[in-house]
Image (cartoon, rainbow, N blue to C red; front, side):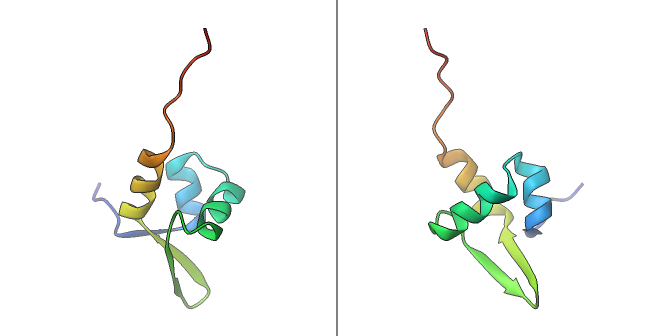
Amino acid sequence: MERPIAVTIPEAVKLSGLSRTALYDALGRNAISARKAGRRTLISFEDLERYLHSLPAYRPEA
């Protein structure tokens, strides 16, 4: 499967495991940028990956 250039919000939710609310929160903080194509909101696949890699690493409590 080829890597997409951009994904819709529902696709970003499925691919990332983040909630719709978390994605819109990140968009609101400008942590992820998006483009509008008519009524569709598109997130660059690279931006989504970059955002996920910027999140803190899981550290189990001792």
